[in-house]
Length: 258
Ligand code: MN
Image (cartoon, rainbow, N blue to C red; front, side):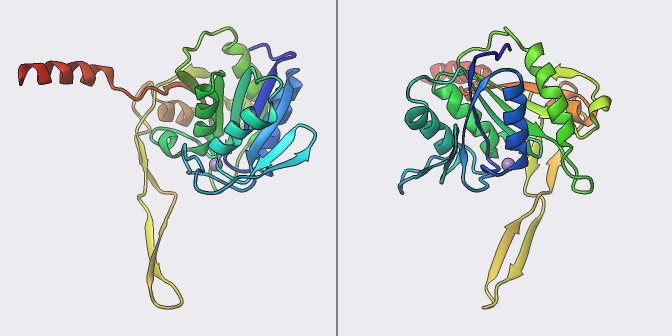
């Protein structure tokens, strides 16, 4: 993707001060793009594609072309495009780099992916970037930093339908240990395996959803399998959630039963 002179809107779900946002801004700027930022004021991880409609939103100008919105990632992209970049819309929306992978079913909870979804829904090509990491070592930003350019170069000119966005995940390995850039499909991964119950100071129970997930790291061709092998995973995600095979079968079944 030749970004020279292109207008790029950068957002995320980790918030305006997140290190991953700065890494993404810097990388896109380095490719010659005119970079605008509209990101949530505070961390909005796992807010999915939620839109704030029952309270007003504020846009705070942080500096130059950087703005913070006191809402969700979806709010930030919507207001960024409709209220901030009013003279000319972006040529590309990028989101991330998320602190943590967005693999398998994560994509349905992810605010990072949702920010890209919002850009795509507003008619602009969109890419979500996430970095898999382990608590013991922490995020290896240098891997994402080093590989964003090559990823964008690899997909340059590739025609993505208007209902599709790209979900990129960087593996948890050193930059030199990355084994390749691969096209994948969404694998299986479900969060919620670790729910802690405790009691508040008044003796009432509360519940805290932990990070533990049930996942399949071995299904060939999936995002999960690729990153666990040290590869960068690119999954095309469709905004049309219809399962076409089942829709066809259902149509037939309903006809037969009428
Ligand atoms: Mn996040």
